[in-house]
Length: 418
Image 1 (cartoon, rainbow, N blue to C red):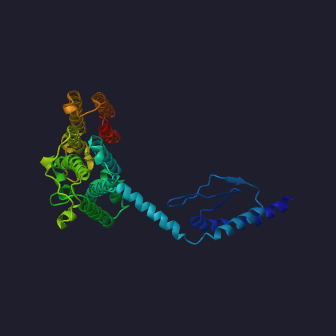
Image 2: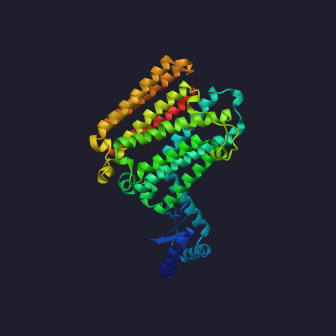
Image 3: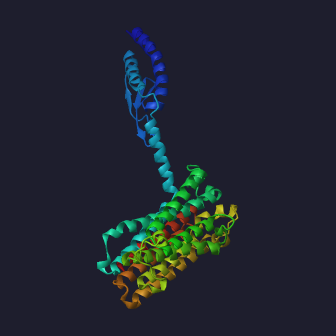
């Protein structure tokens, strides 16, 4: 009996080697794996968006025998039908990877800021407007405005990645152009597509003033990153660009466009040029500016300046290599973090003061406004303290900058309720 067992073991070992070789090729295409080691056979399969990945966590134990060879041969036979490439899976994986790269390309944290800002401003305008002017038929126009702003956002941050690829390779290697997930050619196609789609949406739905402001915003985004101007090389001009686009243009533009839609001041700029617009929009001086809108425009412009100053905190190494002068490369992380914190604290003092004075009873909940801004100021001071405790390490710097953006989001979240 012992001799027969040895004979059976030897007889089974040869087919097992062939089975393992066959399964090795099969697992690449089907996700079915068979492995023999010390008389053990493992089979497992798993899948993901990018293809099939194999694990060996499930193991079964059995005596080496001809039955093992029979079962493994059957498994190989079952898997042989999957040996041919699955084009649909490859295509879906490629599409998923491309969409993921595009999402990183548009910088999600800036997208959130644009959506929150637009929504808060429109909501405030509607709360202050004559209810008889509110018409659900205006919703498509509002959505096209948001679409245009998101396209402009994508264009500006995208073109910056194209021209900052060497800097991002050091500072932000996870970005798709720097990492190679997106080629420069594809990035250019996306940027030009964003600019064209956004400009078309504005021209078809809004007047000449909004169209001109939108085009001006695109120009600033281009001048910020693209030689020969490349305004980001100057620390002062860099934060001036960001404060103008994120602060004044966004808030003023959304408010004016909302008023134009509510008052029925006419269709798009193209319709105006063709003489088909039902009404002519008034001059800027003729608009009744809400104190609340004046406040948020001023507040966010100052806040955008602070963001422009602190955004370079995590990028000092790459900026130095590329000869980019920023406040961080000149004065160091602790000083710039303190400067940004001080600027934002002055903003919060302004907000609390405005809430206390409450000019023209513009704010319906001044106590809530004071408490919300005081809480934000406390959160900011705590964040700066945590950065100091961590000795300004790179992870701590990134966390501090993320918290600055949290304060930015918070402002727009509370604005409609102040």
